[in-house]
Amino acid sequence: MAQRVSVVQVVVSDFEVGKLRLAAEMASRFSTALDVQIQELLQISKPLPLETPCKRIAESCQRLEKIERLAMGSLLFPRRLH
Image (tube, rainbow, N blue to C red; front, side, top):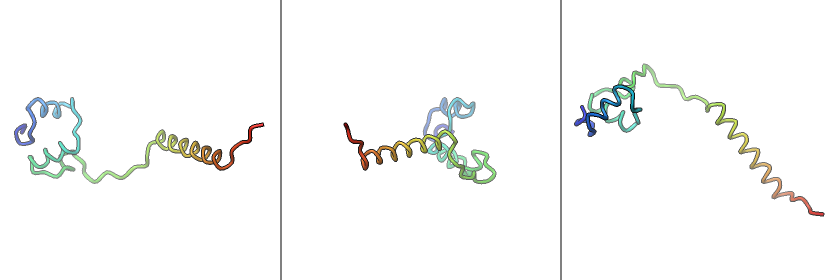
């Protein structure tokens, strides 16, 4: 198998025992070598739904948008120094 996916045997073993996570390129190589669909290789019975971003990412985006609005407001309406 290692030769068929162009890696050393230790890498294949590390994937098998969970020491390495399977990246998209390697999943493609393995599915081609095994002549199976990637979904079957990854044991996905149906395509995964697109999920909304996690709460932390959404909150970070909202904070960045607020900062941007505040910055734009200070550029448009600068405070006068007395």
